[in-house]
Length: 315
Image (cartoon, rainbow, N blue to C red; front, side):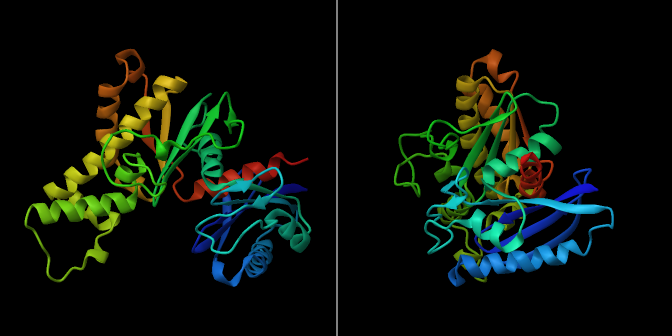
């Protein structure tokens, strides 16, 4: 019988599931709310119901062989424990993998969401055929996953890839981590919105019908695509910070391919072209000439497919 798997992307607000066939295609989907304040047991129950719904799409000659799930960290992928993810309030030392095994009766593997997205991109998206790749998440925060010689590089304490907290300037806003001048404080979605509000104020611009809460990365990108100079400049500044971080990684790791994913990456070349130009300024010419910065090919499907790949690696 053909072995099919389920990939699950557990986020702070929603849980996205995909049924993946033997050719690694997502053939059926489910989406349920996370509702983290209801606790992990309630979320596991919703995941189980969604998996039952996905099973109805299994053909007669297929079996469900396992499930991979990814989550925001911190987590321990070896023990299957969620430790204390800040976006999942109250989920402290949750044995999520074992809870799912007990509920589903299937092999389950747990992985960090950025690493799962990187694996999906590496095996099925922009990283196919590469030996090394860095996947950078640019959304509410900035993080990354390193794939070196075809394997996820975790570091001794599983903390490799904290690119969002590389200091790139001596001054700037205080980052969520408490430091000043981090990549995240220039490039993450909230930082872009903050910079845009400042640019409006500095220009004496105002929109009476629009509150500051209405300024989001999505509508800033829309304005930039419409040619608004302030929006274009704010995204260029964010891209320059991203490119400075990529140049640093390229000089240290000698990796050529950098795949940018998550919500802010949807700005495309409004963000990525300034990043490419920054690499040329901040890395040796011989290094910068080899660096490629591209947008994710899989977008929101990356974590699901990466979790599916992980589920297939279990014996």
